[in-house]
Image (tube, helix red, strand yellow):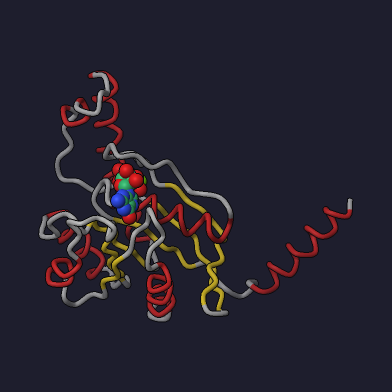
Length: 213
Ligand SMILES: Nc1nc2c(ncn2[C@@H]2O[C@H](COP(=O)(O)OP(=O)(O)OP(=O)(O)O)[C@@H](O)[C@H]2O)c(=O)[nH]1
Ligand SMILES: [Mg+2]
């Protein structure tokens, strides 16, 4: 009973604070396996206690768009309200054979490839709906590829603010400079979603970019 009263009280305060504020639709985009869900999970867990979805070393783990609404991110005493949108990794070619090396059976691999293809279409469909997009790249991989260029080109055409995240900086092969050189017009923040490294700079950039919406 008492708990219920308290809960309602806080709910009222919460909705009053954000009554006039719209949720910022924050999308996580990028190639498969870059760490989009890992980053979205970390943020959601930090501010709501719950994650957004499953992660895996097998590419195309996220095969449909997943959300977390009413995520209040607090940074340096400021609060902003977000709808977090984690998207399936975008790829130009999805062959079921590449899943077989992860010991996935042929039938299951074919199903995964089909769903992953559908996921790519869904991701692109949702682009128009975003207020702000975080492009998550694996900083151990070559950033010059068709997928990255296409995603960024799409966002520019739609005038959606973009932040590029160079993820996996904990790995030896990580090369943030290469990503900066590939996309010189954009802000690039190096982080480790797995270990929660440099998230302060990430939040700083998100808050700054939110003003451009
Ligand atoms: N070393 C290291 N590994 C990471 C980091 N972030 C994610 N990973 C790993 O990278 C793999 C892919 O992570 P996910 O978060 O599932 O990647 P994703 O971009 O959501 O992938 P899809 O859903 O397939 O598009 C997992 O094995 C993660 O543990 C990081 O900062 N450092
Ligand atoms: Mg994912």
